[in-house]
Length: 134
Image 1 (tube, helix red, strand yellow):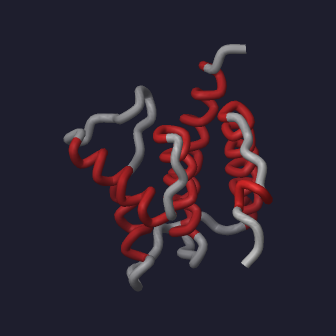
Image 2: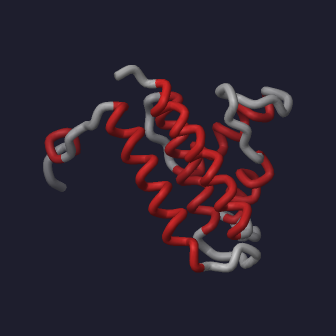
């Protein structure tokens, strides 16, 4: 099986992680620029749930599966009675619901909605980066 993962993979600081997640989201948004926004694509549920995963990692300090991160974030939003969680970040719960449903055969979010969601997470990550000391 190989050595334990901590012996193979180095941890990065939270500051480095924020920068890496921002770079990743920017790359994914740039990579999708050629696709029409009104189309449905098989990658959009992954895009939304990966964004949820990044956000939950920074909020909780733990990595979760894509579906678990999406479900957690959705549950938190429902319990907040529609109010934003984490300051200024406002996410569309319906997009998270649609991405989760796509995992079991539902229609994935449109490219437009997935990109909008990714941009919202990106904005939240950029705010975190700006607020970090140093």
